[in-house]
Image (cartoon, rainbow, N blue to C red; front, side, top):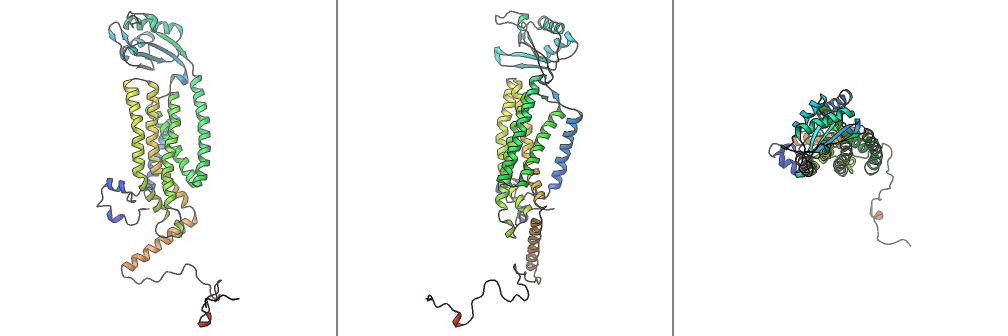
Length: 391
């Protein structure tokens, strides 16, 4: 069903996209094309759920446990690359390490090796091979095997982080539902929670599809995107609430048209907010992970980048269209839509010069009633007010 704000169709061809974004007059038919958004986002969610169910996640060493080795990034022959470390590790145990990462800057750069749990003999073989081939230097600038350290990582810590995150997620959803139902209404609360669930599933699904490593930082970052997603949806719903106040007493717009106008009026704000929010996240990803090589910053920025993008998409293309469908389940909004369309048909017929019967009065007087509830003023001179008070 086509839903555009009345009065905007004639100007769509003359105005540019940026002008329509800036003025927000309702020229983008987002609510009217909601069927295609449902299909697109539904397919995306199904793919994500399928990937999570069949492929699973690439859990990090903090969830599954393993061995972590660390050594300086400078050897007797100069800087040590992660490729050299990976080759030495494969030669020592016959398989590659899960991750080899250079962290830190300048003289404080170190190489961190994360792998599945190794026994004592395998750890000794790896350290001996690394020292023989790469000759890492100690603080005095001399090659030393003692600078290669190792530690066993337990998988229980990551599990505890996940458990605490799930508890926090449950408390957050309960409080958010109560707030939305109190400040807005129940259908807005339902639509906002569906959009929130979409963001979580899509973010987790992208991690599963691409195979990004899931770490405790990923779980923490996933919680932070919930607030952003909800904020963007609340901004749009607040405008919908403003546009639909007293709507049933008027015949200018239907509820879908008023909601579509609200999305258009907040579209530029949503884009600006998203760009401003994503810039520091992108900077954190590039500088923190690309230049400094800090894995925790990379995990935190990556999940926020994916989650915020999903949040913006759901607040525009899912939350408000879903709210419209939920509201149109109520008979009073369907009847109001019929009245609006009948009024427009009569106006169009009048403009075309057709003979249009007059609109029936809003409150019809029943036959035989004869008098209204309030007695009318008596006709004639005696019925006129004299301006004198009766004593």
